[in-house]
Length: 353
Ligand code: DOR
Ligand code: ZN
Image 1: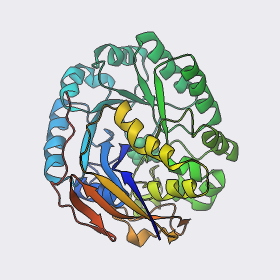
Image 2: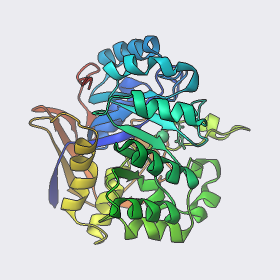
Image 3: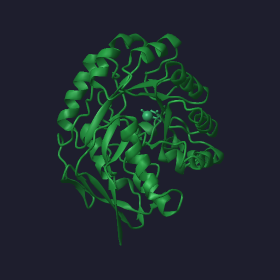
Image 4: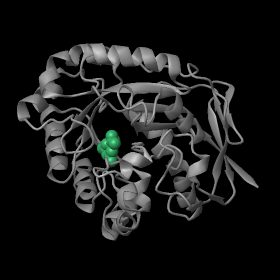
């Protein structure tokens, strides 16, 4: 049997639900899921309850994270019109800034130009601004990157028109990067119809042509694969108002390694998309003596094997080409043969200022 060795993978888009959504995920459970999925470093999103838009909430969350994380974690600060005065303070502790231009789970939203401009003028230039942008908001994001001449990272791109616009922006030399999720690469509208609420997320799944466009750009325009791990309980998903989002930390590498086996991308390219580029784009620290071993053996993804607290994935029942067999973080075995060995508190906070 073949074993493939990879560097510790980095997910720049995880929802860990602290504070306010600990019944869906918390730092200990989310980072266990990360390690089980081959991720040794993750960046957590700020659309919590309350959101990470004030110094008090960010600092309290960092204290909780430090005591409970099993892998390395950085926190995004969130941009919000009412809390814009906190940005300089938030920048001291956050790994990056997230701006939500379009509707998704939670209340965080920026819809006015003055708030966008304040973010671009105030947030330190050496820290990244990541933007949730769909359709014409992608054009807005590229415009802001051009006007203020600073890097912008567009999260979970899902449509042909968006990836082609980003490709054109890059061809002009504009400082734009982007990420794509495995669920937008491996599922389309047909799956959304089949899965009902379990196939609902933002952005919603695309057409087969959108999926084809993403694969056309896998070796060029796409900079990172990011999970958008967005856990919600099954009870919430089957309720009258199901929240959007699916888990992803434990399925992303198995799906992408399957794509490697099927010849859709090379192993070196997978390493660029899931380690090298995320680290470079977000200026993340190196993790010495850190590696992930993947056993190349046909495996069925099963809900019951997951570590995420929500306990389900839209890929339940899907066959993949390999599974994570061992993860070593700073010289210590933190995951082996299906068991998470790292204790809460084992991970480090990423707090570059
Ligand atoms: O489907 C989604 N769920 N997309 C997002 O951007 C946010 C997320 C969540 O927080 O649940
Ligand atoms: Zn997200």
